[in-house]
Image (cartoon, rainbow, N blue to C red; front, side):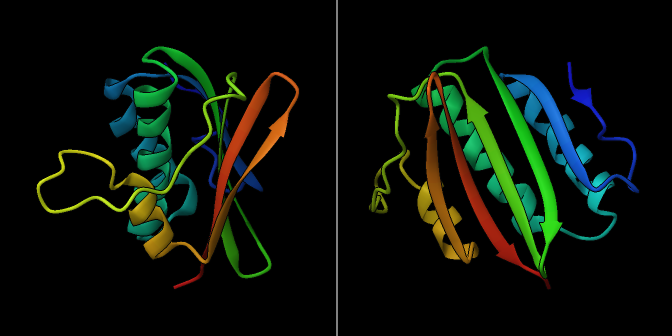
Amino acid sequence: MLQGDGRDPSAAHLELDLLAVPKAVPDLRRAVRGHLGEPCADVQLCVTELVANVIRHVGEGTPVRVRVFRAEARTRVEVTDPDPRALPVLLHATGDDGSGRGLALLEAVALRWGVEQRGASKTVWCELGEG
């Protein structure tokens, strides 16, 4: 299901191509942990929430590319999907809302995040500090 260099912790970055389905998320979290080689709960949270957004707003089974890499004392997470129209929107969910917290969680742990549109795809990314 997961394809890429996720088993090589010496690689400069982790790049995985997968289908955005709920059962892929645990394997993805393990691949991120294995690649970074240290506790990385915030990175795993961001990867999980970005893929969950693709499942919910673009569609289950959508092909995505997940990249995780470190540069300049930061960890960057990118999730690319083939729908440039379904842009993420930060919602402020209340206690009774059953959803709408994904990007709020991402914003709480990330230094910054954004969206890059390129032709027939978009990449939602975030950057986290070390430690």
